[in-house]
Image (cartoon, rainbow, N blue to C red; front, top):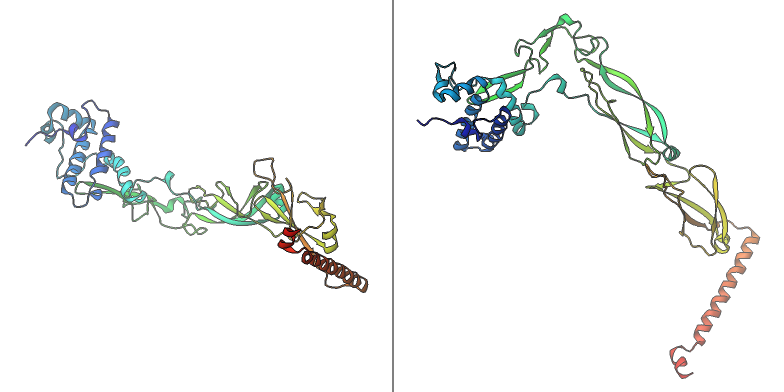
Length: 378
């Protein structure tokens, strides 16, 4: 049988560094992994060969023996213990590499974990109501809510006392169990302690062993000027806290209350001005309120039509992180009177008669015009 060349198998030189060997193995392991090549016996054989090569070249002692005596030196007599029945020596070193490899196939559930990398507390989301004036000016407010937080009695341990915490005998306190199947090496969360590495024999009465309880919390929130309806503010590390003290985030969705005068369209403000027929015909001046307080006077032109929009520049909502503002859009609404006194009714009758006379006169002039042929022969 031909002598195996582990360096050629991994595609590295004989003076390759440990990092280069590890990088080559990871690349080839991903390429030839059976899960990426289902039913491909050649890929499975290649995967076994590169795994065997890495087991030797990643171990300084075995690599020295291999460099000096070749494959035969690893089978005994030169300090090597051999491969035995195809299992893995240096298992923990291989597991470091397979952790990244298996993650690409199975997700984080198949990789190594540690307490410092456990999932943090859950994010929380609440709604807050503010006025349009608050949205215009910006505002600081205190927001009170309930969240999960570490138990003050057991300090997140979940046990009634330290003596009631025992090391898990199934995983020996590691929180992970390791096993091999053929030429595969796997680690998984310990099924007995669920990754904790410990067993609680008497749970804390305050938290029932969970390590967390419901607590009230209060945060100071800054509402930025110009915030729009539906905007979401994020307050870091103010969500639920897990038993290890790692907190999620708090999200507050802003809802702007109905305003008596203004409607909002992004950064513009809409305002309706109601005027009577006489003011619409003759023109007038009216006062309109401003969102920042006070009033301003605007001039409505003669003969303005219902639904006409007038614009006041820079009188709307502020744009975030800017000195600019939107506009105020003033919609003209002409009110038709429904109750008239005798004097008003008489005036409208006379006005109508005047309009009718003008209409008859205009119609008569159009008829006397003679049309097209009259213009030709004149």
